Image (cartoon, rainbow, N blue to C red; front, side, top):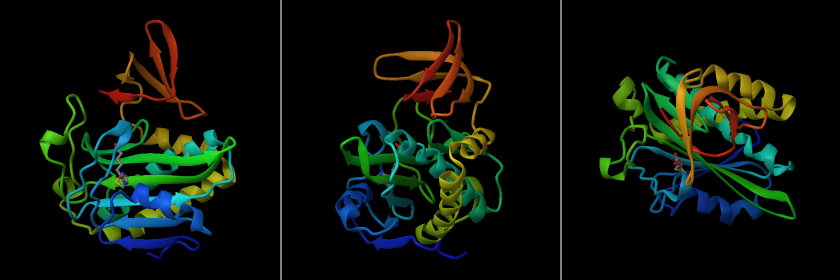
Length: 248
Ligand SMILES: O=C(O)CCCC[C@@H]1SC[C@@H]2NC(=O)N[C@@H]21
């Protein structure tokens, strides 16, 4: 596997968070850059949660400077989720048990294998940089006291498949897959990404629950629309949800 052309790579022994490092280096970058940390001291997850990444797991962030409207930039969470899925297939040689959970977790055998957190900065309605933070439980899962009640149980690639892969080798597969989907996205737009994502979606057609800080919507997972929103068929009709945590 070859490292994709045009992408830089930095490997850090230790950093607070690769997302913080992304914000620090973004203004100096001439092109996309992957940052891999062998250890994060202040890793973070979605909705302000801490992210625990024990040694041997992947903690990486891709920094981009896309010249696009914010709503287009945000669709890269689906691009990244597809790349993560493919990287898992590449390193394990199998796709059985892998699925994507809206908005952007990767599940393996029903457990949470990986998560994605997008952060961006901008001014004047534009995005100056996008940071796609990715954590993968390659060899270890976080301790159980890190888990939120009702959250998907974490699994590791090693425990579920017996395959042990180091973070740098996984990043090689991930960067290669990301490059493929990024090209597809910038060439053809969101449509093929959406189709590919839906083909790998967990619980499509089944009843799920989408919770925000203030509401819960229960309904049949109908689709993800062209803007990346979750679409549920509920007792009160079709509901479109831009952001939420999903529970099965
Ligand atoms: O809550 C989630 O599921 C998203 C987790 C994202 C974790 C990754 S690890 C690399 C990057 N740096 C961080 O501090 N967080 C992301």
